[in-house]
Image (tube, rainbow, N blue to C red):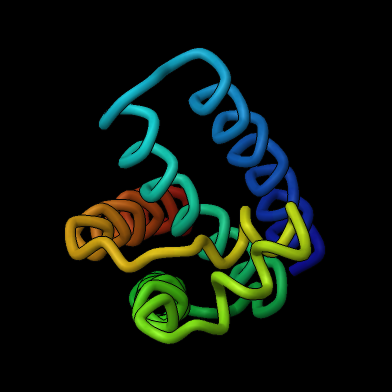
Length: 121
């Protein structure tokens, strides 16, 4: 399991770098929705790092659930208030609800599932 945990942490680092690159180099919908997809992939990698024996379907469900929870929390004032105080909170929680984000989170969870499934065979 240590190898799976290390691989998941390495994947998390790669996803963070990709997310920063997408935000720095691209603009518009590609940057926004690419960031959403990568956000869920990061959560997926962290789930596998925390629970290396998790089956791909479970890791995907948890990553998607966390991503959707954060998005739906944006319907309240809490994420916006925390984001106003902390750049890190802004990156993690966002500020405003956007329904299309829910789709892109699902795409990110599906991508994580596909890669994880291919790597565990």
